[in-house]
Amino acid sequence: MSEKFSTYKGYPLVRCGKEIYYGYMSDPYVIWIQILAQKEVDGENMVSKVSVRLIDTNEPNPLKMVVKNAERECGLYEAIDIADVWLSKALKAK
Image (tube, rainbow, N blue to C red; front, side, top):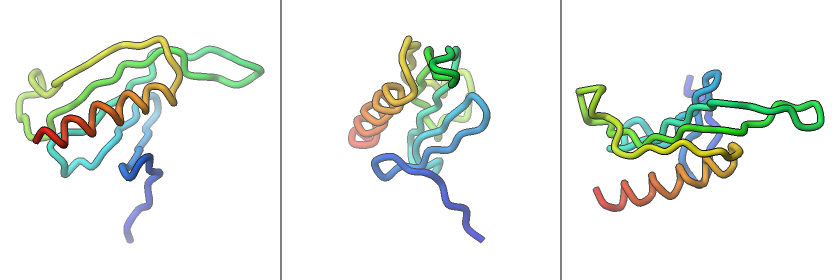
């Protein structure tokens, strides 16, 4: 049985707690988003700070896997837009 994932611009989005992975693990790169802070807005928890990392899926050394990273005071939608730009550029360059 194959599992269906949410997608954004054709790439899967997989969330586990405060971590989101964007992209196909079989591709050379994937994005790892960590939710660092949340704030309450109208009774709902909203993401207010994230860490976005471009990960080289072929790098065996975990200390060298991160190709690009940034911390931003932004919401989840902005973080996913950053992720999409980074991932698209990295995959085109490969």
